[in-house]
Image (cartoon, rainbow, N blue to C red):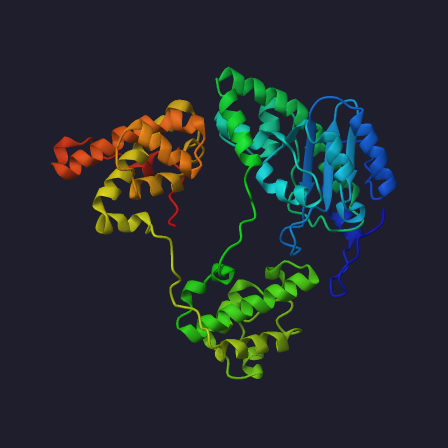
Length: 442
């Protein structure tokens, strides 16, 4: 198997050591990786001759590499077999996409893999997501290993899920693990489909899968440096400017070396430097909190970033302009009517969630409910609520299940605001329900 070009500064991967440390897998035929164009095109022909849906998965090197590219793509199709591809070696997968594009693709947690699949030219038009299906079916745990064991009675080891899949050559135990990830997906899809059908949720699942296909899972964030863990402890504009410049310096180096930023210098080290503002390069070296494998080897880079932050003529504001909607904890003081609407409608959604045996966050995204509660339509009726939620991206089935309960909750909230406590139903503390997803301030 040929190996993709490695950055000069990357540490070599010790595949033999990884093999020795690997837990033993159950018996499986030897798995090989297709890493040539000739082998790839031959596999495309075999896959085209198969039948039924396409089970597909991708392995990345999250936490090891800067990019989120696929380092292994696995495919299984009945009548064709199992195929493991080396994307860096093969390049574009347009020929495969042309063959399978209009077939149903089966993925587990498609939102995690669609972006890296699309990067190499693989883009489905019909999807069945077994992880999302498990949520809609009301299964208590939705990890692939757990769902396979519950529905198929097969134990599927998951010890390599966080491995460095950029390793070359890949250990055989890892390849067996990767093959098993797709070889059971078709059977799992059939069992999951039957479960959803028995629960009357087939159409719900179809709408959800279609929605996944239309989403962009790599949104561009403004001021991404503000996501530094612990940046809230950095006070003062000069300090924040240093934090910003350090983040950009690390990001640039991480991109150059295709290394996960946190493996070079952790967030805590950048924050420590920004807080202390060392007066010299020697002081930066002496800062014990400034750690990481590149903290000393790239000391000139970090010192230059600190200097750039100190002399910046465009320091960041202490508090960035946020969304127009404040965090829910502040609603009682800022907008009591909206606070009451949110509490009552959230309780109604929790009740509906338990009735349908669908998690709250899948029944209606908490963010949509917050936005609706803060800025409700002029008329509190089902048509207006449906229109408002539809414009935010809610699916038809979600509107069918949640619009009227939200109307009732909003009307109760209005009666409370206009009258007295006795005119509205008591607020249910949804935090006591095990079905409620934690509320996230935004």
